[in-house]
Length: 381
Ligand code: HEM
Image (cartoon, rainbow, N blue to C red; front, side):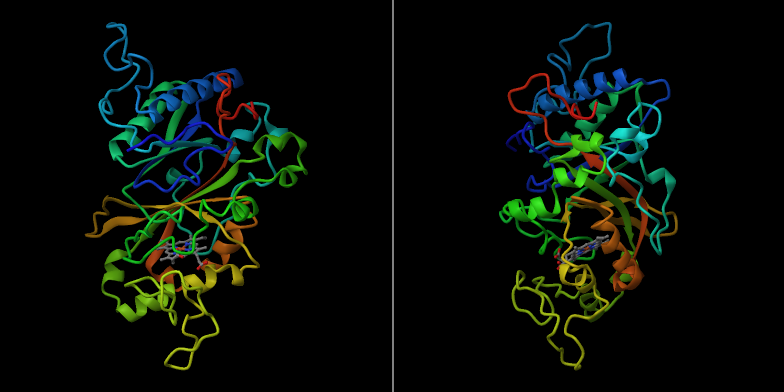
């Protein structure tokens, strides 16, 4: 339940060992809000977030110590709870760079909407957004409290476009963590990028200055990262009546210990040349792991940091459950897009899932240590 440092070269919540709970919100800037209003909001968000990540109230005396005639500056439900590893990660969506704030010449080349993919069934009410806030913590109340208070601070300037709760991590982002399981019961995050691999992170996760050279005004994103969010519904009832063999062939990994088919231990490298008992490849060519593996994608990798969700039921006797996919990368159009195209074309998993929400955000670098004036996105605004 210790605190995760808020300040640093990078924003927290990207390579921070993935916490167990998440509350994600996408917001739109309200008409009439000016660039100065936006700066004031980002300053206020930065201050409040720094306090909350230490386990403190959003403002000093915020719960019950303020003016009795005004609404409290902290909603109160996290009072007495520890910091719980809270991180909040902020990002800017492509739509923020239209003509409203004079930011057109500051838009990084890579911050443009994702293309449509085969089999997508996107709900506009669960997609897009001018800004995002990803709160992760070990206690759901702490994550929800953080988002709720940031929304409250933004009243009149921003409004909620959509939000998503996640109740269990589906990824490891550090070698110190055990691999969790997704709602199909498989270990998820085995072959993920990890915090302990700084060279790979520079190569695949952090935006490098040369990536921004095409648009000089976009240099503010250097050291940041792109966040891709996809709400993926999983047809768990169909899955639950599928044979174990079919389940394992779908992923190309065994369900029990998570080893690649034909391998022995969870972290064995998949051997795509190995033949199975039936004479065909031990890891099917239509399996998720084969298609998503860097060897099939010209070396592309991403940092996955998703969450399981269950949002009640759908009125037809099925749970509205799935995986809220979040991934961080250096360039979504060169990493997520070709990867998702390959999966959408052939992945055996497509029979059991459907993507119904999508968003892309650019997360600026972190708020500098020892600089009380710094705030989220200062380099942009
Ligand atoms: C690997 C599940 C969607 C990219 C895996 C693994 C599982 C899994 C069980 C194997 C363990 C591991 O290495 O983490 C799922 C489920 C999904 C989903 C249930 C949807 C509900 C996606 C999407 C992408 C993606 C949308 C990206 C477009 C990857 C990658 C790997 C992976 C890159 C690692 C492959 C490797 O290098 O071995 N996924 N996944 N997954 N997945 Fe997914």
